[in-house]
Image 1 (cartoon, one colour):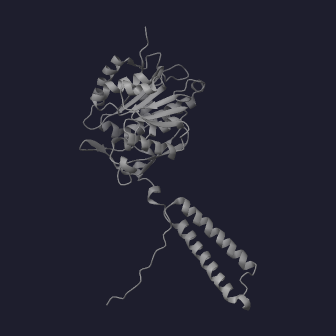
Image 2 (image 1 turned 120 degrees about the vertical axis):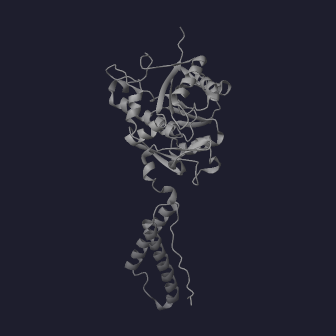
Image 3 (image 1 turned 180 degrees about the vertical axis):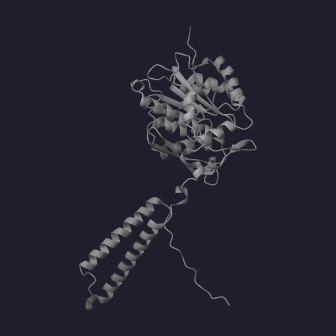
Length: 366
């Protein structure tokens, strides 16, 4: 025979952090008032109004006790799911192995609702919402640009390393900074991670662009989430000369990563770069290998198109090379890049063909 028992209701604190804080304050205030009332002998029983006083005592006592229970429950409860720590393999913006799925790639960290990415040279951290998995943001779930890709993480680290090197070298701090005070445009920004990092690293204006309007909304959400609305803007930009005319000659620096995997877009991408770049501006582009893609062949094909659109490759032997040391020696981007990854991350990158970085500029008129 089974006894009928009333199911106990477990007191659950609200998941909203602001509401929880208000309940903490309420409980604290009520406890304080209760103590003061006792000291003032406010609950002394008087026969003339005993019934009313007992009702007030009952009400206040219950309110104080419930406040105390909520205070204890709030302080002792675990954080809500969206604030939970990232799994160890995803922490600190880690680069992890991808697996190939039909028409795309995936990895475990893409399923997280948010990722926290540190900016080492400033001590900041960026909180990036993703639109993938069950924790996705709105209708953008499933789009390519709504996840933090390894290439974006690597580009962000490279920008961070460049800025860290400038901090260490007094001559570079005097006015030849790569990002500080510049107008930066990111093409194919996705979540906006690299754009937000550029702003944190000193860019005066950042324009984060993507060809998907829904992805741009996610970027705007991340801009607001990281309190960077004053110097970062998000805009829809479909590649091509006509659309790029809206941003003609606006960018000192163009940044981008993993944009050249489709050879059908090489020409419109090159046209866009040539249109928005200032005459003395530079493009910093990073390409990362994936299973089934040859990063060197991909970049080689893109560079052949770039030259026909008025751009040229700037290498370490060029007097336009932007990364030099105080003593005049050349600072290698490849060396900087190698310092940005751990041994395990390097294994992940090498297994898919590695990474390459190129610097482009407008061709100089002879």
